[in-house]
Length: 171
Length: 278
Image 1 (cartoon, helix red, strand yellow):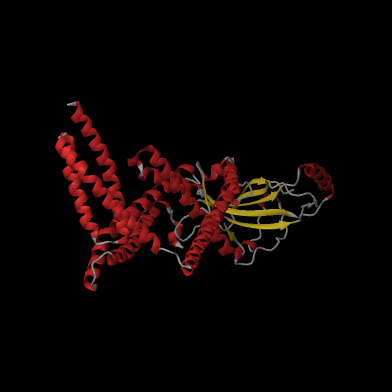
Image 2 (tube, chains in turn red, green; image 1 turned 120 degrees about the horizontal axis):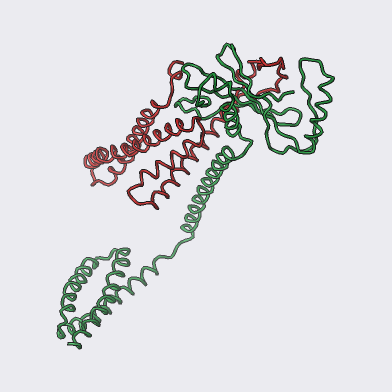
């Protein structure tokens, strides 16, 4: 597909930032709507107005902070890919830690370290979940049969293409 | 002067103690009980506090005696009220059996939820640690193979420096997962990994295929190499693989059987980085 033929990396930042903003706004909107509904005086009109006010005030703030987190994370991730030259699960974990550290920079070095640990742990969990999901999803397909011995025809040895066709296990 | 000073100190001490006691307890107990007298009491206490403090600081003796004279009965009355309130409260709060059962059930469900959460978190941590730190994970093998490819002169001449590697693209565009297949052959685990490399040369993308095999235990390896040498003299077929059976348990280490780079999907050219098949 054409869109996968181009490099994901710089465009991924905008993608992630926008996705994070959407998540934050929608989730924050629902949460603040319920909260505003509950913390309003009795009467449906009051409650609806209260919930609308809460949504208008707080949901963009939450969306904004999510967007900052997502954008910064993706930027650091792409920078690490560029510097290291390979795409690894290490990149998101380190990016998460650095993002947590940078966003807690106002509160001093100890808070930065704690926030870095939290960010790294969170991203490690997400990566682990991603790995598990892809492995289980691909294990639903029949696993690869025992391969026939590949031809040893000298320097131009090639694998038969069919075993890789459908029985691929994604990590 | 000293007398007034001492009295002022004593007064502030008593004030702190009594006001602390009086203000803390009523708000707790009476808030819980929700008595009507609470606002009155609080107003009275605050008024007293406001009244008493500046007089203590000023150290006027008559007013000190007045406030000291006034506060103990007040305190007794309040503590009496508090005691009676407390008693009635504790008398009323006998937990019935059904409530105990409900609470126990609630605690139990919370415990179950906590355990489930810990299990899931532990599983995720185990997965990610095994993926990143175990030497038999596809990621580590991909890393080692990428290093070998990077230092291979032919690869450098085709792709330029530096060479970057990546795996399969997921929907979001992240390409960290390499595709791999594991299979067992003759009691040993084999793994085939496929990833892509790309260099600064525009438009050139290569696919790296590699296979690793689990290494047998050490004493078998020596026997294996000698047997291989013996066999090579005798074999003539193009399928020149010799598989030896080993009863020993595997060591968990992997060695490369082959690594080669395929350029262009139409297999115009293949770079062999390593070939240990025969």
